[in-house]
Length: 138
Length: 312
Image (cartoon, rainbow over all chains, first blue to last red; front, side, top):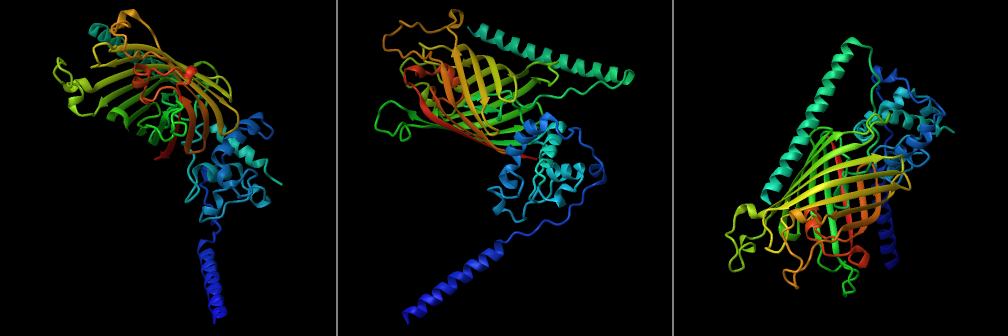
C-alpha cells in the first residue's frame, strides 16, 4: 500500500514537472520583416576596424550579453526566461543576413527583443556592434 | 547677506540665459551657412562620461535621452562607529526614492522624497554644452538646481522660546551647481563643479549660505564595472559666513567635506553603486551644509544606489 502511494506521488510529481516544462518551452521566433530602407543600409564600420573590438565589444557586453551570451550562442543568463528562443549568431544562417537586417533586428527590435535606439545613440557605435556580431561567425 | 544670495542667483540666471541665447545663435548661424555652403560634417557627441545621471549623491553630466524615466533608490546605513550595529547596517539609515524624467535630450526634471527631515525635493538639470568626438567642444557642461522642502511638523521651527515666528518659507533650501566634465577615454572620466547652497532658515549659530567645490571621477575597469570617487568641499568664505566658531564651545561645526568611494556595476537598464561615504544627507545641500564626519578619521558609512531606466 505504502509503495503504491509512493509510486503515485512520484508519477504525479513527474507529470507536474513535464507539464510545467511543456508550458515554459520556448518557441522559435518567426521570420523577421525588415523594411527595405533598413535592408539596404550599409555599415560605416569596415571589418577589422579598431572600434569593433573596443566600442562594439563593450557595447555588446553591456546591452546584449545577458540574453545572447558572451559568444552570441543565445545562452545568456536571461535567455531561459524568454518566451522566444534567442538566435545563435555563430551560425551560417544568421551570418547570411545583410548588415542592414542585423541592424534592424538588433536596434529596432520586436516583441521581446527591445528597441535599443535610445540606449545606443550613436550610429557608428551601432555599426561597431554589428561588426562585433560578425566576428562571432564560426 | 540676503543681497549676496540674490546677486548670486541673478548672476547664475544671467549666465544660463546668455548660454542659451548663444547656443541658439550658433544654431541659426549653422542653418544659414547650410543653405549657402556645402553640408558641414556632423559633430558627434562622445558617449556619456558617466553610466548614470547619479554618482553617490552627486549629479553627473549624463542626461538620458528624451522620454526616459529613471527610478532611483539611494540608501545609506548608519555610521561605522564601533557600535553594536553590524557596521552600521542595523543603525539609523537614510533613504531617498526618486524619479527622473528627460523631457528633451538636454533637460531633465526630478522629484524625490528622503527619510531624514522628510525632505521633498524637486530638481532640474540642463545640458548646456556637450563634448564632441572631434574635440571641437572639449567638455560637457550642465546646470543643476535642487529645491528642497522640509516636510516636518511646523513645531520644528518654533520650539525654542524667542524663535522667530514660523513661516512656510522656513522649509525651503536651494542648491545650484555648474558642472563641467570630460570623458578622457573609454576608461577615465572626470568632472568638477562649483555650487551655491542656501537655507532659508537655520539655527542662529549656523550659515545660511555656502559655496562649495566638487569633483567626481570614474575609472572603468570592465565593460560593466567602474571604480568611482567623489568629493564635495565646502569653502570657508568669511564674506558669506553667519556663524562664529567660538560662539559656543558646544556648538557642532558642520564643515567637513563629503567624500565617497565605491564601485559601480551598470547594465543596459540598471546602475548599481555600492560605496563608503562620509555624509548621510543624500541631497547635495544637506551633505554640504550639515556634515561633521571626517572620512579620513573613520567617519563613513556603507551606502548603495540602484537606478532603473525605461524608454518611451
